[in-house]
Image (cartoon, rainbow, N blue to C red; front, side, top):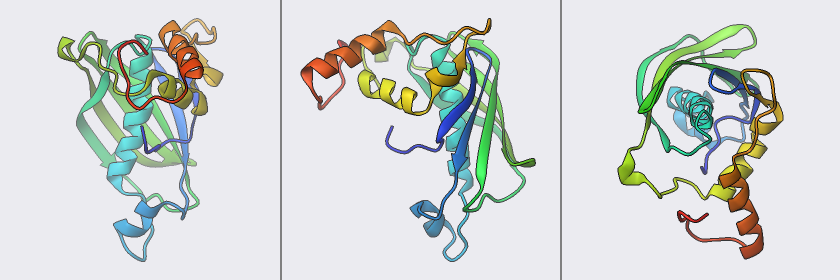
Length: 187
């Protein structure tokens, strides 16, 4: 994942809900290029913030074993612009979780002002993609740690989330071998 549209998780309850924050700054090029002279966060990138927040929540339900991708934006309503200096809070909740994917409802707010309300659908890629990682597993674990998933994450009964053994093994292997140029099923 090269672009991050969330800065950190502030809440994460496995299989149920999560909240993440994004501080919007003038340093972000996409704000200048979207409407020249009027820096504003594009709606498509707000959707991407929902996709990252909800996608990690859905993926964690199965220990990141399945490849979870955004399949469809079922509904999206926007209520206000997001400008530099705003801190956006994404809140997502799983509405329906199945073997082939999930439906997630989300809201974004700046303070107490509603920015957006969405329903998004995630799909789990089928067997044709088995053994193909979307990310280097060790790098993915680094991202999860940077975003604070394991700092704030809890199970439904309140216990801290446990890092999947597969990701820990990939991290240990990467630390022994050094940087890799491509992901493979063994890592």
